[in-house]
Length: 192
Image (cartoon, rainbow, N blue to C red; front, side):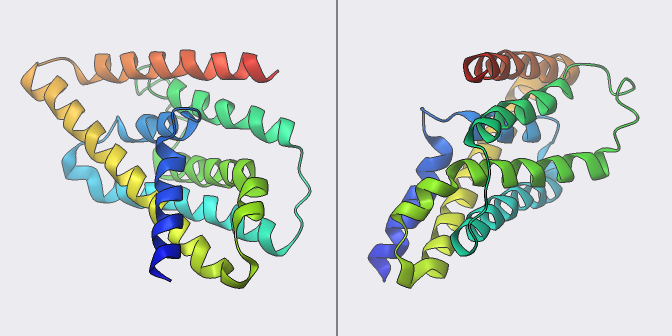
C-alpha cells in the first residue's frame, strides 16, 4: 500500500514537472504571477481547483467511457494557457470585463478538466482496477504537491524581481506573460 501511494504520488508530481509536458507548468506560472505571498491562500485555493478539475476528468474517464477527441483536447490545452498568459499582458483596465474573482477560478477548473482528459487514456491503462480510488487520490496528491512547489518558486522569484531588484510588477507580469504566450502559440501551431 505504501509502495502504491509512493508510486502514484511520484507519478502525479513528475506529471506536472515533466520536461516533455510543460503545459502544466506554464499554466500554474501564469496563474501565480499576479500574486504575492500575502495573497497565497487565495492562490493555493485556485491551484487546488485545478487539481479537482484534473481529478474529476480522470475519475470520470475511469468509471464511464468519456468519448472525446484527443486532437481537440491537445489543442485546447495550449489555448487555455494562451488565454491565461494574455491576461498578464495588458493593463488591468483592458480586461475589466473579466472579473478575476470568477474568471480565473473557472478558467483553472476548465483547464484542469481539459488537462485531465489529456492524461485520462494513459492513466486508465496504468491504474490497477482494484485500487482506483487510492491510486487516483495518491496521483492527485502528487499533482497538488508539484503545483505548490511551482507556486512557491514563482512567489519567491516575483518577490526577488519586484522587491529586491525593484522592477515594475506590471513589467514582470508582461515579460512572463509574453514568454509563456509565445510558448503556447508554438504548441498550438505544432498541434494544428
